[in-house]
Amino acid sequence: MAKIAVEFESVSGYANGHVPGRPARRVLARGDGWSVSDVVCSAGPRDRPFEEQYSNVCVAIVMAGSFQYRSSAGREVMTPGSLLLGNAGQYFECGHEHGVGDRCISFSYERRYFEGIADEAGLWSRSAHFSTLRIPPVRGLSSLVARAVAGLAESGATAPGHEQSIFIREAKKQARNYVEHASASNAGNAKWEEIGVELAHQALEISSDGKPSRRNLPAAEARVTRIVRMIEGRPDLDLSLGSLAREVKLSRYHFLRVFQHLTGLTPHRYIVRAKLRRAATRLMLEPAKVLDIAFDSGFGDVSNFNRAFRGEFGVSPRSYRRNARPHQ
Image (cartoon, rainbow, N blue to C red; front, side, top):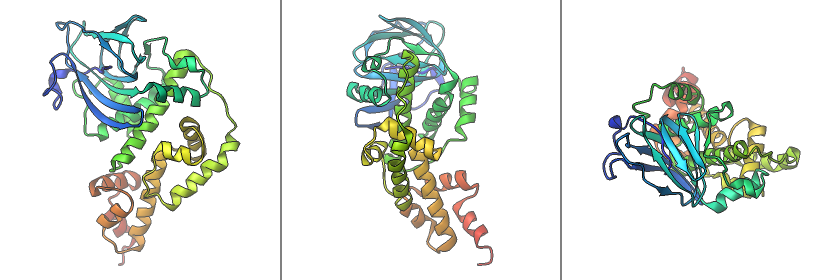
């Protein structure tokens, strides 16, 4: 639905099976009440805009290109780094008067899910309806946008055409400090859900000037600490944001906020790091094959394990073992 700009002529893998000038969508992840997609549009100045309607709430990160976004609420020019906002049931159209193509990372939220995030964040329920079409590229969103760009890169996609734009270069620079590779689809969903929840909350707060409630952190500290201990005991478990929050009877947003406050990491990053620490210990102490250690640690693919391990420790698992036991 929403779009994200790119010179479409150089895009591969999207051109087949969709109507020219219409957006092509590739689902990156989905869960109960939400989904996230990579959306590429090939429309240009010669293509006539067509009316569309959102079935769910939409928050999309513009990655490259530009386009005109219109609805009954007004008209905005969408540029890289900005957020496109759409309400469920809203009619809209996108035009490309000044160039060809666009691309976005588009999050879709069922109404009940989105209203739940608004409530969890302490914003009034009426704030779950966007009164504006666009949020400009504000500094507070930079890190979150970079994480989403990193997630798209991990999925095997590239940002063609406008890849060398300032936004993409800066986003990738920040993303290099964040990228971690998890193989299982559940792990990928957990990462995307965290981004989606944070993105929805920030979009609500910025667009409505709402003030989130400041709940008592110490009251939740003991419960979140219990989750940290559980992860350390079984980092190989597939633990989603929702299941962790339910375990300690906290909302997703509140659990995520407290967890990051206590550990400095999102739950997904914390779990991946715990898996890698345990794997490194086993590499030093045990003669087990790297493949077996990767699978036992919760990585479904040894190549993903190798990339994640190198990103964390700077060397491959085999080199790490060899350096740790040089005389054996």
